[in-house]
Image (cartoon, rainbow, N blue to C red; front, side):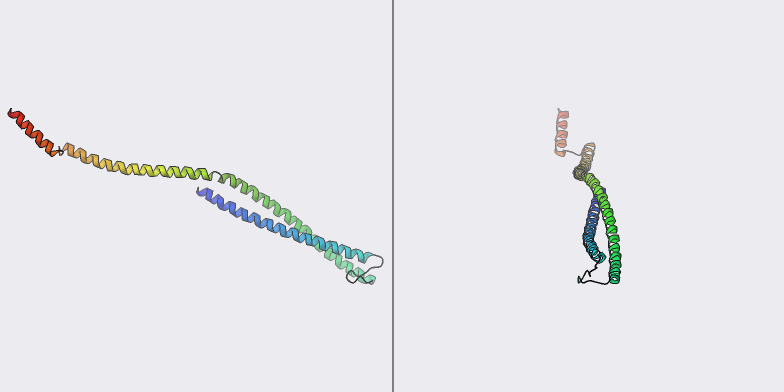
Length: 178
């Protein structure tokens, strides 16, 4: 039962770890959703800058080709950085999902092992009851052994029924007088 108690602790720890992994995965997915929207916005701005008559993505006014190239370079750099983060987050989500599944499998195995706990507790209770009855019987036997020893000593010493022995002696005397 002590091993099963330890397995319960392990199961709880794995459950908490799995919840943490799932929370991290959800947060990364939310971050990736925001990154996807940001990358789409950058792509739209980049498209605006690459047209023949480039316009400012903020104020929508025509801008000089040199400024358009500079902004396009910034948007491309920012987009590449966002895409790298997006891919890294995706890989991390996959790793977290794999770890969560491993923990789930481990928890299921522990659950199977813990199903035996109830039967073992019942068995332990029966054994405890039997031990208590055996101990009580042992105490009673010891008491009876002491009483039997006293009776045996009295019998051996002829120390019993003094009145009956006195009457018997009187009867024997009367019989021998006859």
